[in-house]
Each structure stands twice: as C-alpha cells, then as structure tokens.
Image (cartoon, rainbow, N blue to C red; front, side, top):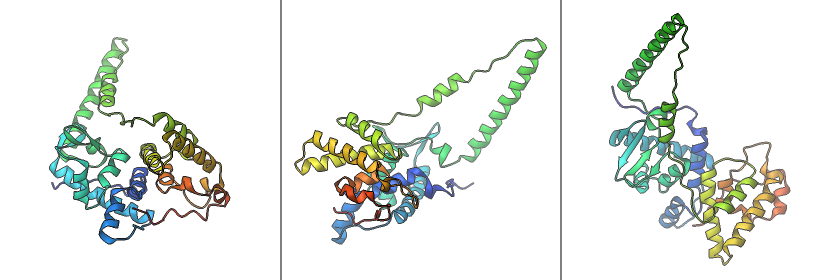
Length: 279
C-alpha cells in the first residue's frame, strides 16, 4: 500500500495554520526579506492567500518527512536536519520557523522532531491494524477478568496511570524565551483574544528589539506595548462583529502599537489585516 498523508478538510481553518500564516506575513520575517531582495519591492499578500500557501507547504513537508524520517513512537524524527531545510523543501522562506511557532516541529540537538506525527498527520496501515488487534485483545481480557472477579465477589481495578504518565513524558514543554517573560505575561493578560500565545511571545520580543533600535529603552518599550494593547483591547476594533478579531501576534507584527488610539474607536471596518510589509 502506498504512503499517504491524512489531510483534514478543515485544515485551512486550523488555528495553527492561522498562526503560521501570520508569522509568515511578518515584515521582519525571512519571506518578506526574500521578496524584497529578489523583487526590489515590499511583499503584499492577503491572509487568506497566505493560509492557502501554508497548507500547500505543510503537505510538501509532511510528505517528505514521512518518506525520509524515522519513527519514534508517535513522533517522526529527521536526524541532522535544521528548520532551514524545511524552507527548501517547501520553497517558502520562513516556513520552518513558522511551524516551530505553531508547535508542529521542534529543533533538537539530534535534528527535527515532529510531535505526534503518526497520530495527527499520517497512518502506518499495518501498525494501525496491529494496534486495533491489541486493543481488542485487551478489551476481551478485561471483560474476562471482570467476570471472574464477579464470581469471586472481588472488585477488579484497572489502572492506566503508567500509560498516561508515559504519554505525558513524550510531550516536551514549550521553550520559554528568556529576558522578557514577566513583561510578556503582563502583556498576555491584557490581550483581547488568547490565541497563538507562542507566536505572540516571539512577536513581542521582536517588537521590543525593533523599538530598542529606534532608541527606546527596553523597559520603556515593554511598558508602551502593554499600555497600547490594554487600550486596544478596550476599543471597538478589538471586537469586530463582522469578522474575526486580529490575533495578538498579527497586531504586534504589523506594528499596530504605533497607531493613533483614536482610530481604534471606530466600528472596525477601517482595519485592514492585509498591508504591504517593509523589509
């Protein structure tokens, strides 16, 4: 049986795809720099188009990873490979870092790890059938044990704690950047929609560095971002009725903290999530 990729019909609307698309649209990202260097003009593309591009890139990357990688439990490992290789596979600069933002890949010392790859994106047909047989055998054994226990008036308790513990150990905690954790935590408490936290954390760090390059002290930059987000979160444009609210990462990547707060008091129609990005 040929290899195949399990693709959900609603993948286009998956929150992780939206986070990846917002990351790729960043004006400080690899894709924006690539477009500017090769076309001598700024990148301008809609979020919807970028989400379709993202889905296509994921299909290419998952297909190659399934063919070339090695299985480790429910994870897939590509030894001695870096995130930039994913950019080359998909022919899309910055897609590897965007996948890391979304939690679909992890860079380790050994190479790249795709967490829960065979559980979420692919199926080993024979392994799947064997797993079903094992599950059925365990179910029959459980029923037989319960019948024997009833005969002896003994309560049989089946404990799956070790299985849950093993599963929890296989999921690595996200890497938390150092230096701005406390400021970002305060910022995150103020945001209007708790979506794409890790992408927002990276965008927050980039925004602080960008403001430092403009001569603003690090602490002042963090306070400014917090104050501006708090003001935006209270405004009508943070809660539009005719479309989805802008994600915190997108808000930061687009430099919306430099907007005139008075413009946020409109009904939200003035907001354009599709803007040309400076290199």
